[in-house]
Structure formats: C-alpha cells, structure tokens
Image (cartoon, rainbow, N blue to C red; front, side, top):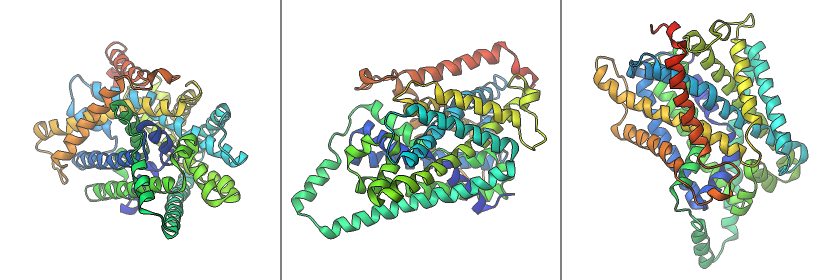
Length: 465
C-alpha cells in the first residue's frame, strides 16, 4: 500500500517528463514573447490546479482504480458502456502512444546531444531511431523485469527533481550576477518593454501553447488510476495530488524564468526541443553542459517513458478484461513474469508507430497536439459527469467537494481547447502538417469508435451486460 509521500512521489514523477526540458521553445515560438510565455505557464498551472481539484472530488467519491473509465461509466450509464469505451479507445490508440512517442523522441534528442556535444539540427531520424530503442527498452524492462523497472523509475524520479533544482539554482546565480553588474534605468525600461515585444494576438497561438503547457503538467491524475493501492485514499489522494502538482508547478515556473535569464529569446527559439541542453551548455561550459547534463536529462525523460509504459499497458489490460478489445484473453492475461506482457507489447508497438510516422520538422509538436485533443475532451466530460452525479448520485459521500469556479474553469478550458484548434492560425501556410490535422484526426477517431461500439459488439462481452 502507498502512503502520502509515496503518492506524492508518484504524482511528481508522472508530471515531470520531456515537457519542461523541450516545450519552452515551442511555447515561446507560439505566443511570440517572453512575458506572455511566462503568463501561459502560470495560467496552465492555475487551470491544472482546477482540474486536479475536480479529480480529487471524483477520486474520493468513487475511490476505486480506473480513473476516467469509472467516472464516465457512472455518470453516463446510457448508452451502455459507450463513454468508457470511447475513453479507453482514445487513450489506447491516441493519447498514451502519442505522449510516449514524444517523450521517447526527446530522450533520443538528448542522448544524441550528449554524444555529439550540440543540438543535432539535421538528425531527426537518428533521434527517432534512438526513441524506438528507448521505447523497446522500457517494454523489455516492464515485460520481463517488473520489480527492477519500478526501482529504476524511483531513482530516475529523483534525477528529474534534482535537474529542475539545478536549473533553478543556475538561473538564480545568473540573475544575481546580472544585478550586481547593474544597469541604467533606461536599459531596464527597454528590457521590460522587450519582454512583451512580439506578443501574438491570435487565439489559436494560445491553444497551441496551452497544449504544450498541459502536456508538461499532465500526470496529476495518475493516482486516480491506482487509487486501490493508496492507503486511506479519502485523506491522502487530495494531499498527494495537489501537493505534488504545486511542487512541480513551482519548479516549472522558476525553471522557465531561469531559461530566459541565461538564454536570449532567439537562442531559446533556435534550440527547438533541446532547450535545456543549450541552457546547460551556455551556463556550465562544454564538459558538464554539453555531455554530462544532457545525458542526465535523457535519463530523466527515459524515466517518464517508463512511467508511461507502465500506465499505458495497464489501460490496455483493463480494457481487454472489460471486453472492449479483440483478443481479450491474450491482452488481458498476466504472464509468468507477473506482467501483462501482451499489453506491454501492444502499447510499445503503437508508440513506435507514432514515433516514425509523423513527417520530419514538426513531429514533436504534432504528437503533443494529437494526444492532447482527446485528453481534454474526456477531461471536460469527466467534470460534466461530476456535476451530473451531484444530482443523480447525491447519496454518495463526498469527503472533498470541488469549488464551483474550478469546475467551471475546467469545463470552459476543455471547450476552448476542443473548438479553437479548428480556427486557422496566422502561420498556417508555412506548416508541413496542416493546422487542422491533429484535431480532425482525433474527432474522426472518436466518431469511428462510436461506430465500432455500435456495430462490432466488442462491448457485449463486458460485465456491464
């Protein structure tokens, strides 16, 4: 059984991944200015807290593992099993493999950076090959050496936190040394004006940026999927989830400030997904900044791939046992290695497909966008379900009740994130991947899954019947 500190460690380890080491350049490029980039990170933290609060009520009201599958099934009982089926299919086929592919590709980016000592601008396929190898290594560990994999995840979680603390300390040292050198009031005023120079006024730019920010903050719901293993969940779930999110959000905002204290905005933009590597190279020199620290960042993002592989395989395993998938007896089986080996293999196969299929140039951003769209749809529907259950299941005990403002903010944000991606952005003509590709593919898959539910009858073998 997991205690409070174990639960908080799981939340922190699930949140900290490739996002904070790679997305700041993409967010700056989307919103146009350093000041607005920082605002987006703070707004993302506030909205994540709102979502976390709603999930705290859901988890303490229905204290059983399964996350959205359980909440949607209880809130939307008709048509039978439709909503949990759609969630499982979207999570298995889009959200989980796209996030794992993004993390795996960034792991490849930083391992290649450590090997060459610089950001490899024209080596995207080399990064992808390393990413495939990373995904397969994680599958091997979780398929055949489960206990060792869990121990490694714990060690890599410590590495992640220490890296963020190092970024904050290096940035603070840079800021203090800059203040000691001093400067005129006119130069300070000019710098303040420059912080907001180039700010975008297009709504789609902020949706694109928020998808990246929420990708970095995703993971605060991780305990809701394994709440059966949490000791005294009514007491510990709210403390562990909210505490872990607040600690991580603080480190994220301070880390972004550190990036901009050490690097100028143009350098951040040009660094692409290797911004943390360029940061340490500039701050610590070649030996540490170009070799050792990028290797540690690669190991940190590897830890997130390991966490994601564990979670994604369990979703496939549970969906197969519910009768939502073909070959349920295979995918829902525990191997002699005490792991759902077939589910791990299926999850890794989908991850590898997501790593190699997007066209070069915008692959990382596309993976975040296509995975974030269905995720936000089901976030919104889960909170709508929460409001419905306050009327239809008023008899259920609610040890924690989410604030009305938090529920409204989460539903409003979900609607915004689901509608605005279809609005044409200013730079639509210069993109290799059409702006509508990610949201349209997600909507098409969800609609197609409705057809699968209605016509193929996989759900009929489910205990719901």
